[in-house]
Image 1 (tube, helix red, strand yellow):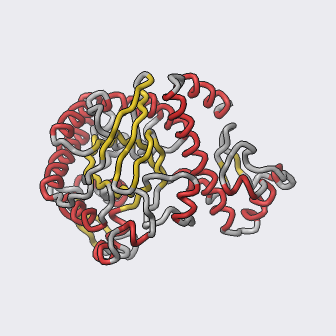
Image 2: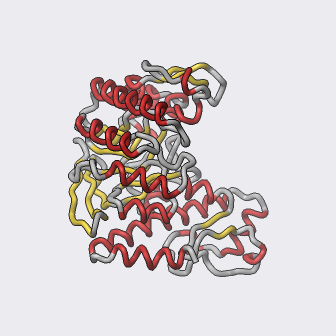
Image 3: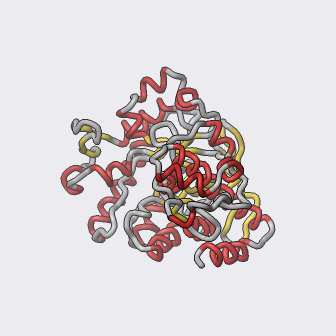
Length: 369
């Protein structure tokens, strides 16, 4: 079955909906934890379920190199391989185009992208067709079109050339896509240029994908530019299909995205900052290495229902980080992911009650104080 999206109601442009997948039905808007190498770092599938996780992400490029898509396929697909029974989205490898192709003009060609393995330096060549074939074998619920993530800043000439090529790549990938139980999302690019964002959105929608993503954000641009990138594209995306903002997980940006009509978000942020002793709280981020937490025998947040807050204190968590114990990053990852998922749960309730903007104001007033 292809995924289905049901729009339940709007509060302004904020959308309350349901995403129906082969691995369950889930409410949107949602935050999706990132499991690059077929695991969300340091967490088990059972722990992800405990924080009320729905869709999680894995990375096509990384799984292509290790263990290889054929091994995952022989295991019965990504869900069985990693023992996760919820829905999985695989990205296309397009971000690796952005991060690993050193000479953009030389290494990114019409046929595909040349770059070197981050593991052993081996030359690699990734094409739209190969990206889709790998994802078909991984058998995720949602596959992504192969695109170029345009750097910021980039000239208009470069951005136009790249946007047009991404559209051609999208068509090539869609033409060979052949997994009837998998959905394929198109990706809107266009850089920091309004006319290119509009053009990319309109042309991508013409290809009739199962959902649409806004890509090329969080690549070094300021916040106002990122929000404009969303505004310039989202008005041209269909109301009856899911809208996904790639690589965004800061709580402020979640509210800004939802206000503009985004349904799905992903980011490595909650687990990455957790490994560096940082925790999300309703009053902003805190660093648990700080000396003031040495004798603080309270949880990170009294109102948080996560496993970490129910069982451990800030003093103990600080001890783990100071002592170099990996359990600290593990416990903070549980809390941080649950924090963002709780924010999304509360956002959904606020949309249901027609008070999204009020909740946004309440949350940000406390979070940014």
